[in-house]
Image (cartoon, rainbow, N blue to C red; front, top):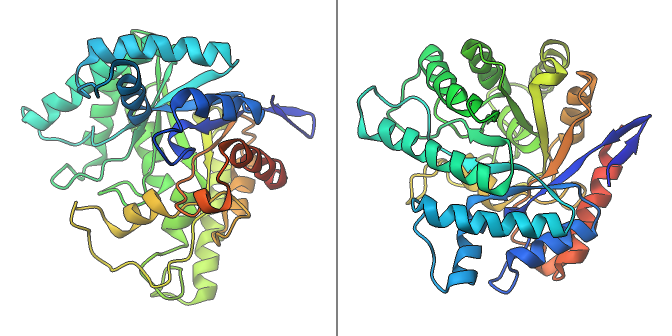
Length: 338
């Protein structure tokens, strides 16, 4: 059920990858917990599709066996319909843009895109989340990044689909909302907009998991706060509300001890490690200025989907029951709104 807020009705969503922590927490149980907590929609994650395929068929499908994924997707659509949930978008589509022309990586990126479009059709969603690439060796040219996304947008437009482009704060060349907004504008396509995220912006521009202070250093604290305030004011006054497709919500734990300032064994940068494993619900132990970011998004006039996307290893200790966890998430959304 949408949240009523100053005369508006705000739709809500919950990412399926952000609830449940053991094999017995199957996708059908996740969907029930999310629906029972009053959410209107889900972000459907590809890992959940693959896990549900294993549950149905006894073995995990190949992530590139799109015929199998389409059949699994059809059954997921039936589940969401049963619970009255919309599938807001399919996520996370990563490392797409910026590969050299003619490279095997670029071919793979577009092959994956075509396969994911088929899955989108099967599950009944019209939106794909694309995260700003964290791959090494990709182009730093925003014109070239935009050209790839424009080509993808044209493929999506054939089906009436759209792209929600998100700044991942550890990405190679587009870690800030300003970066992805510039790239979106350069595409000159009507079916690409922004997936904004409280963690990705506050955790990139203000917070830092590699410092003892927990925030970016190299400037005075007053300058840090001034820079953050200017960024929020810029967002509020330059991005049209209709180009914000959704706002994802989460906080982050202050890292003690800090994460080492280097990539891990899998090549994941420190903020990526932070993002993947240390993002609680709002008002649940985090410290980032996430409400300030939500307020800036609100000042654009945006009244669209608020979507909970958290990754909290402590969640299973604090809320062993998925139903209670989903309800806590809904309560935090109510509390955050202006």
